Image (cartoon, rainbow, N blue to C red; front, top):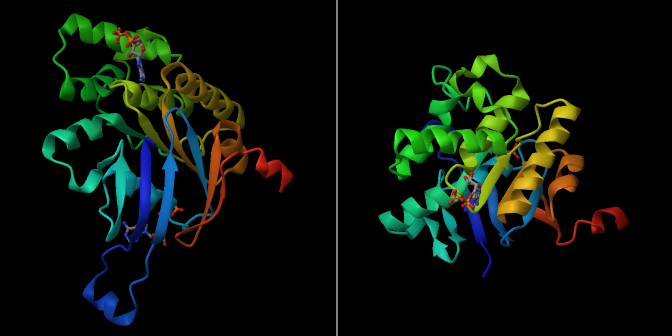
Length: 244
Ligand code: ADP
Ligand code: ADP
């Protein structure tokens, strides 16, 4: 069974009544299907406005599609009971592009990373501190930074913090939405190698959303190309890219 199966998703954003009268509501996603296997990375490519982020949100359970299904380990995300949904929220994490706005500026690194852990697990102060230290080391940050605030870090370091938070609950799939796009080339390469390393050591799967074909090629096992809300091409083996 695939880890994730997206089946025939069609979605349009609800628009105001006035807007609807003026313009036929156009679908942002039309009949999108894809799947991700355990331990694999699917690169989702396409120009800005193609619908990539919307698909990411549908997969994360944040935007309910008008039609179609999202099956995570065979469980229908939008028709699961509360217990299953809670489990799904834990197994499915996200890292966005804008690393500064995805963290609360008034929280320390320690508090940022502790948040998902505290939502799911009862840990003693000692255990929490140890886990946070391990996670920071795992993503290449010195645990001594744990009392600092987001503005004291570079974009690359903050993305490491976001990654630490995303892996804290040992998820199965991480949606990376333009996660390296705003970083300089060198920092991008560092974050990509960190992501690759986490993928191979934990058997993590990724949906790597990007407009950057080089970044997608470097990390993905397979690629899908999106245009105007549709998947227009698929490469199950990324080396096909070189021969096309
Ligand atoms: P991409 O990630 O490929 O750049 P998006 O999924 O962000 O594409 O956007 C696809 C289309 O949906 C765009 O036309 C965008 O303007 C529209 N869109 C995105 N988010 C919303 C929203 N919250 N409400 C209405 N329209 C939206
Ligand atoms: P422990 O029982 O101490 O959690 P593990 O072998 O499960 O031991 O994990 C060792 C380290 O790797 C911990 O820091 C843990 O957070 C991290 N880890 C384990 N599995 C995953 C995973 N699937 N995703 C991210 N991090 C993980």
